[in-house]
Image 1 (cartoon, rainbow, N blue to C red):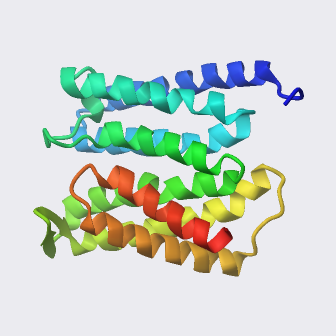
Image 2: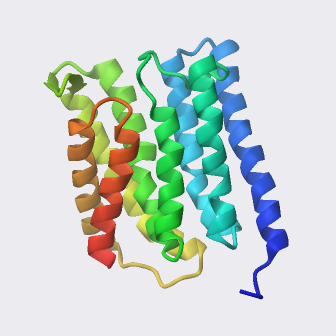
Length: 230
């Protein structure tokens, strides 16, 4: 414990806030200057923030510091949800608390998988990329719909969720160990494991009410990854 570089953690905290507020700024610029709809800017922010999982495992020395930014943004996003501060990340559905749930899931993955950084990043990839692409493709090209528990989704969106979750999970399993200079996972097990994670995540996403999937999808990915690597 005495070898911890506290200066590194403080620096990482500053970089975290600069990065996330920068992502929010980009979303606002897309909305105000680019005329992009809120659902588009929401997903830009969603992907940008989710990818900070990589920065988290690369920059922070301790989970106690790493967990501070997502916990902070639980409060910031809750305030924005109720007051409409960051309109570029607020969805059309008034009851959708997804922007609050996602940093909760982020914080939970940091706490659970801090000693397994590859799994920390990987557990967030189905939500980061799969969900974002599912919503984007489903809204634009979704023709065949189905309804579960009062939430309507499209077959095209669910297919996009499966595909992009698989791709993002596969790349995370391969590349994060390389970035951390840890023993890599062979590509075939990575491909198979990613398929199992993406299948579970897609199923859970289809069964989850709007917004709750920001909690249930990372949880499902975490359970499968823990079974595979535990």
